[in-house]
Image (cartoon, rainbow, N blue to C red; front, side):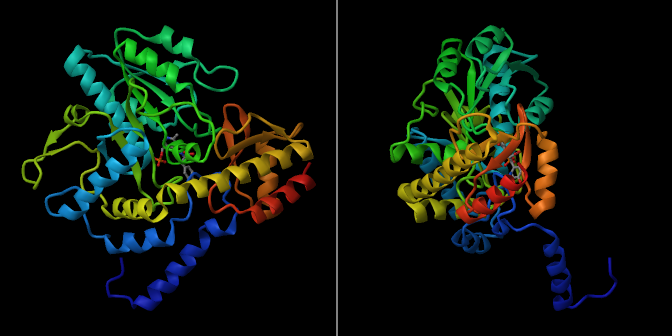
Length: 386
Ligand code: 0PR
């Protein structure tokens, strides 16, 4: 650390050069990210609420009431009239909270000590962190030939120690929606906690349904669904870190509440203590600003870009792995490995694609910062590399 203060301008100059090393979403080169540039209005609101701390809600009553309102609005979007939950630190904290609620609920009401959690192989790695922290054994459910959770496999893997089943609406690698209705039925019949990870899909499926897209049921309309992760900082254009966790019942928050005696509110259920109010209020502002129709328009545009990319890839001769259900396209070169192609893409024009693991393929997430013009440039390069 320097002994004497340094002039602001000098520091800002250094920060500019630091920022120059970061990629910018606006370059269109970031093709494997579920995050995007936050909406300018969200940035404005975020700065306004930068000091608010939801960790001590009695001090920030307005911000806390706005978190509750935001949860109710998102809950309604997911067909739940009276939602409970929090805007948290990304999908990771949301998933950890869901797993913790399930584990504690099963411990309290069923006396399960050595719990198991049934997950598809396609589940995000945040569940590995959650299972590790909660001391739960992961039981991996098989995927079917379409890379979705195999319903029979889930059924077969239920034991007396199962504390939760997880399915995904918008898988990280392929953007696919698991057969959630069937799993919900199984969970309901067996009285097992069912969590849906819609971190990615939760902020687009309801809006796309509004304008006529056909999707299976995935939300609280299904009686077996106990909680849903839905991240405003992915498809919602909210600033990082805005993850969302919505619970059907208050008791799921209560079973994991710890005493926080010297705070203004006497219990806390989130993993994080001191936590931002800024991203929460920014989410609230965006929900109002866009409305259902605004978000529908956005999601529709991204689906059109997805279709354009998929069809153009096929025209060149690339193999598209699955029919996209949301705005992710995964594909392969008929001969080159995805790692090889990904390196060539980076070299030719700085493209940052990501490589999916199951199956091995180049994976493109069509977020708001990837325009049609970027896609045309990308396709030109892919044609050259074919
Ligand atoms: N659930 C699903 C289905 C996800 O895809 C992700 C993250 C999470 C939960 C966890 O969310 P947080 O990262 O908010 O905690 N999916 C992306 C991924 O791991 C996150 C990401 C975003 C990765 C931007 C890279 C990137 O540049 O691929």
